Image 1 (tube, rainbow, N blue to C red):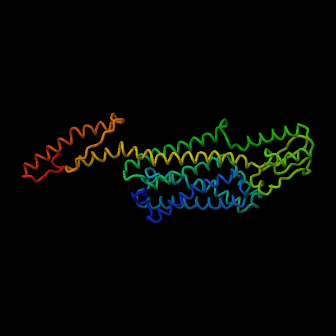
Image 2 (image 1 turned 45 degrees about the vertical axis):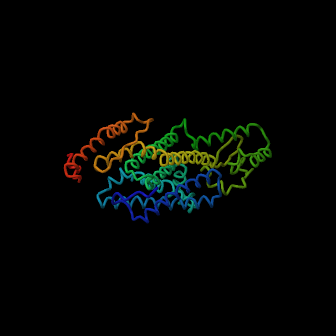
Image 3 (image 1 turned 180 degrees about the vertical axis):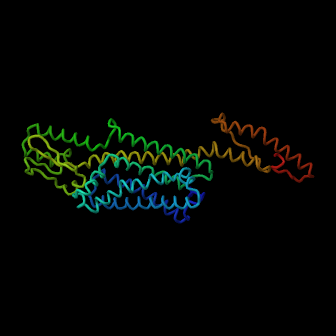
Length: 374
């Protein structure tokens, strides 16, 4: 594998391209760690550190996209960069995440006192809004940035076709996840639905008529109620979680009113964990898909398409190149190998006859060139 060759004016110097490649690999690792942190509900301090790192990556890639766009625009190659060199992938994997995910997260994490101000209360909405949570799925598109910087063969055609297949596959997976996220029947991280479910479970527990002592003991020991931050009855605090300082960062904005005067404050970290599991699963699906395309399908494409075309191309342009195309039995009916059989059976013998005739005519010295056939 090698870093892709410079093709247009939108590329940076080679050391900077290698730095960007390292950053892409690191951001994929960061994505995995960030999902693991949400799955296992890591301490808030570690979540903040990951958020800062994520913000730095989003800012870096946004600046990269801006610089590539500016340089290619100055050179008159912006259309080529954006559409044919997957500049739109650079855009989707940077600017929306910076503006809608990591940017607001940084404001909330680094200025928690702002969350209580009415003028900035929209940040809490922004933090949990369905559209913003869906936007996080765009992180998966970053895998294509690795594919865009690494080539597995010297064949330009193979790299372009396999990159197109990878782009279509990954974008299709991401669009599928986005669709699943917004269709009610398929939603797997709906905060409102989770809140209704938890209200029903807590209401059933209260209706069971257990004593307050038993209720508090259940909250403290049962793994099914670890999302309860505090429980009150008639404004009197009955139970408060020992993890309340960590849970408050993922708390629902409002307390939940239950029956018989009970109120409860809940965390939605379980929904975050469920969402992270799905995203992590999708991330590994994409990684394995890209790996399969790079290390398996690319080789098949080269052997069954690119190499035969390469041999026939050289054989047509150079009279001293007489290598035959090997035609595998299992794909002999493919159009490219039907052409190869005609090349082997007709063009090579004819070229040899013409070459021999020209050599005899010139006294043993070949003066034949490709211009003789045109």
